[in-house]
Amino acid sequence: MDTWDRWAVEANVEAGIKAGLARFRKEARVFFGRPVLTKRGFSCCGGCASAELTCAWEADKRGDKRAIGAVHYNKQVAAGYRRGEDIYFHYGAFDGLGDCSCETMAGRIGDLLAESLRREGCEVEWSGKTRDCVIAKGVKSTLESLTKVESVVE
Image (cartoon, rainbow, N blue to C red; front, side):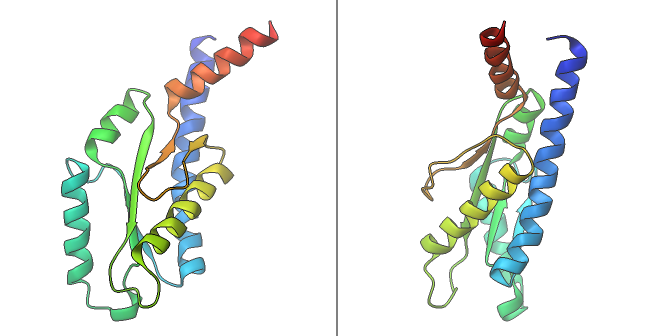
């Protein structure tokens, strides 16, 4: 695989992830009737990001119009992604959702995120369990997959 092919793969992976998140935000608003917060390269680590998102949600005074949950990846993940590594999306639901448990809502958010990314051409790995991140394969994984296919074809 030459340099031009690698650049094309990088551009396609990046475009797929951005488009997948845009699709997710739009579909979440329709599907849930309320927004889901999405943040890229947010906060220093997962723990700080979760705390900051929870504080922002608690400060939001829009009542039943405020977000039902959040999807994010932190600055550590963003730095790895720039090196071609996979993106680990953390997600979850906020308390106070009425008759729906946080676990159930988080599962729905994870399902919709994984499907939105797939529809935009991203290779996604997710167990379907809410304790696991939704993983969008980065450039390294995509290139490894393509290299394996090329060696089988040759």
